[in-house]
Image 1 (cartoon, rainbow, N blue to C red):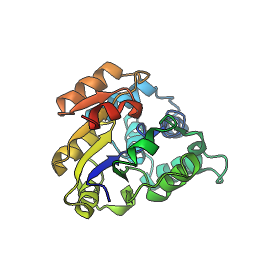
Image 2 (image 1 turned 90 degrees about the vertical axis):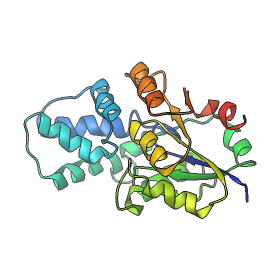
Image 3 (image 1 turned 90 degrees about the horizontal axis):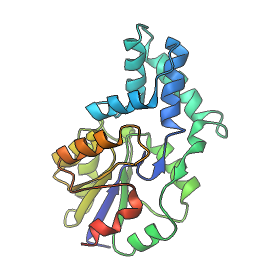
Length: 226
């Protein structure tokens, strides 16, 4: 077993969720409030921190629009769009970001794990669809912890399984960075140039003490190989 450990957030890091989670937020908010919120507005909320949970974010955006809806109704509608009938949900739009060969090289030197804000079965479904040949272990989802990110519980659980390993956490939000800091794990930020608040995201990730901010994970070897 390797003495080095790479722990990945999933959304915006391993997979592009622009047309899945972000679109689901937009559709959910529009369904209940009649307002089509923009993706730059969603990113503004993400950059504030504390909005890693897209169900909670959707609910807050609906409330900000002046509409009160039971939280569970928001969750149920969100999931109906995201999951669909198993074949037509927006989760199926997710696109694998890594170029061919990246994880094959990384897996020769590192243990690979995932700590994500999505449900574990959702993460496993997308990993099986996009990268069935890769092994990430463990995979910790939001349903495996008592407090979601930025609380570090999930990250600490993973690190405790390999206490002697040198480790890094790779994420794309303020909450990911704060989670890593609380767990005492070096943080590598991802800020896609296509992000509607790219410059702001780079600024806030650097302010949260990211050791590097990359365009995407295809640049990761330049940091962890040093």
